[in-house]
Length: 101
Image (tube, rainbow, N blue to C red; front, side, top):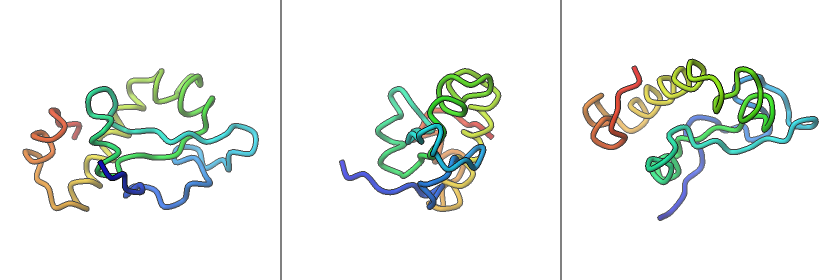
């Protein structure tokens, strides 16, 4: 599988959520749809860069701790992916198995 760059975020130097530059909290590449959809997130460029501690893994509202934040990000990325690839909601569901909008 060929990985492509993020279609969501051109700037790999700042956190997608808080905008920090990663100097005090290194940035991670976060695949928005994980588990069995992780490879599809990579294939379609559905990934963002997040502060490792604060916004990605350990923070109170980090995407791996706060379902509301995670689902909001998934919905935003779904809409961007549908616009970018020309997918309908049904197309997205057929690929990722769920509608987040």
